[in-house]
Length: 166
Image 1: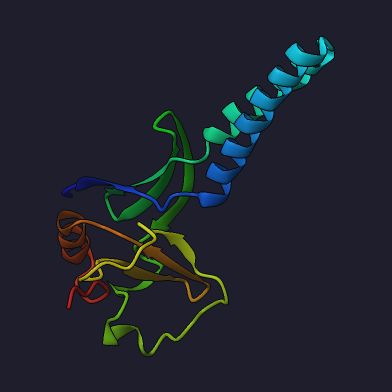
Image 2: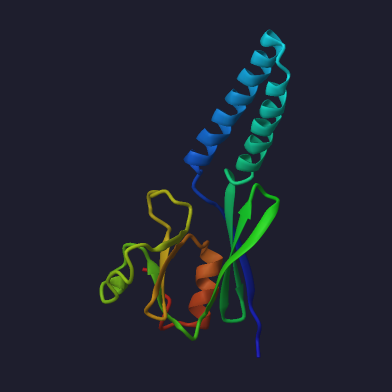
């Protein structure tokens, strides 16, 4: 039995709400420090430290990357926060995958839309050409992801009737 292993790392879309929250907390921290110095009410320093700590924790979630691992007929998706913290998001067994095709492929016409909200583990932006793929899993999940050519090739070798790259 041959085992295959391919990994692909892509940068996710920037989380603009978290970036705005980080900037706002930094601004609040600076204003509280200035106010504490001007009014000599040093209790504001504790609030400034709290805002600074809040900005640090919010900044941990602004930079997101996705890692796709293909390990012997399983696709594993991990989310990496700030290049330091890893979280396993999902594991998809190829025996239960219905189809994998480019997002604008005619092979997806028969599947329609499984749910109102698809799980998006892709780069998050539409590029030309659009390199995002859609995975339908067990008729319940619709997953959007952005594999590289090597990952698509190995998935097509594992399940040639389920993976399309038209």
